[in-house]
Image (tube, rainbow, N blue to C red; front, side, top):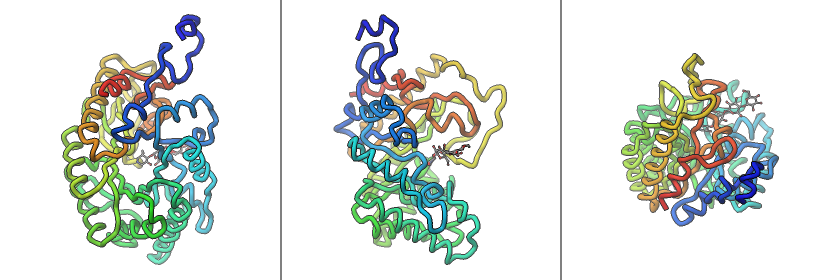
Length: 359
Ligand code: G3I
């Protein structure tokens, strides 16, 4: 391997400087699952090196987009199951558990939903969608993000087409329908910033309502879209404890750490920021000081996750490497971001080594 390095030939994807890269999933095998978000090219195994890398590093996966209602249910009576079927095959073949994402979300809805005016039609869409999609993948996906991002920052219910037409009970109803369609699948509520006190309180109220109705909810996903140097460790720990106290599994479901300038926190996809001279400060590489801060933040996070490994079942990164992160295009298009543990060539960053050094 040293010879390979000296000749300057490109390194194998699972080696860094001639050394085999440790595997995240193996490192944390006895603690929690390690997941990633997958895009269509990865699901279709377009790049064998990428496939090998994914299989070596991760044992759980969430589709980044293809199971969202706008993609899987494009017309009233038409479903596009092929990509999700391929994902299920990918998981089976590579021994990767799939978390379905997501049944009920106000964003990335099919265009026809915008034209629906009546309560009955919204209810019909809602019911048919859950029954059909959750039913088809029953026994094929391990879990579902049944409802995604139903809360405002102050903990009140977000005003969506579902709240407007079906009332506050739509969340409980979504879990009830999914439970019926997929009785052996784990059912989760998923949100961002739900480690923040006000939103956390709203999330807890939501969970209690579901439980009081005698409907099953197995876990809460804290998405984990955080910012370098400002990771809210105390709030995260408090949230892990409070969610677990409800009898729930806790998951970190969309982990990334933003390193670029942003004037708000979270993952509200409808928010945009204007590009200006300062908005893309590191097109040629991350300065060492930021790289070290990122590494320290990731290490502190994983130290916390390990402390509560009896409550945390999964940590999923939102993307395999920096080049594939949604944060290169949101809230400003075309930036060069560095939010994950692997760089654009799937090489481990200092943050990766800090994380695996905890074991
Ligand atoms: O597929 C089209 C392509 O045909 C078109 O040319 C291109 C031009 O804009 O857009 C492509 O669609 C994009 C899609 O990702 C696939 O790449 C959409 O514009 C873009 O908005 C969409 O972004 C996704 C975003 O959800 C949308 O809401 C991100 O990839 C995805 O990472 C992100 O994921 C969400 C989670 O589901 C929920 N939590 C927040 C998280 C981050 O926003």
